[in-house]
Image (tube, rainbow, N blue to C red; front, side, top):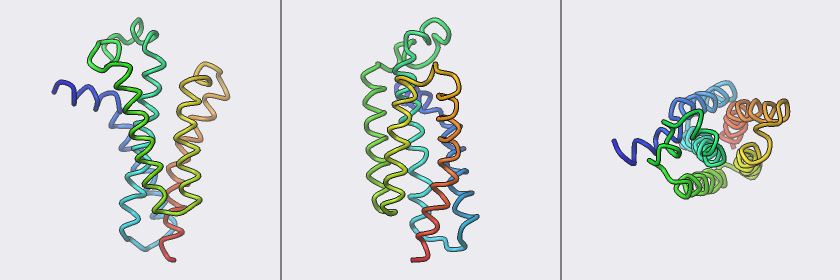
Length: 154
């Protein structure tokens, strides 16, 4: 699959699917309205998560070269620059799309897009603080789906 396959592997599609399911669960538990906002609600969390995975691999490149040399960056299938560009692009898309859902949703998406950078750059190896941030990231999908659905009746 070449370069595209490496990009897909970098984004960890199974995790992205779980974020869609989390957002959908939050939505379904909050409303019986199914409108176009649901599409955005299910699209934004995987974009943010895939961005987070890219920046995580960017900062883990040296460690992965030893422990996981098959990963896209250490194997040379994706450059660090490409991973950084994926992070920037997917974060921007997630944040930009969230504007259409509401101000609170925009703030939440902006915060969690930023948090993945903070995690990868500084918190990953801190133990409890890093793990707490990842746990909040998982909860983000449910909360985000619920908040976005709450605005669907208006």
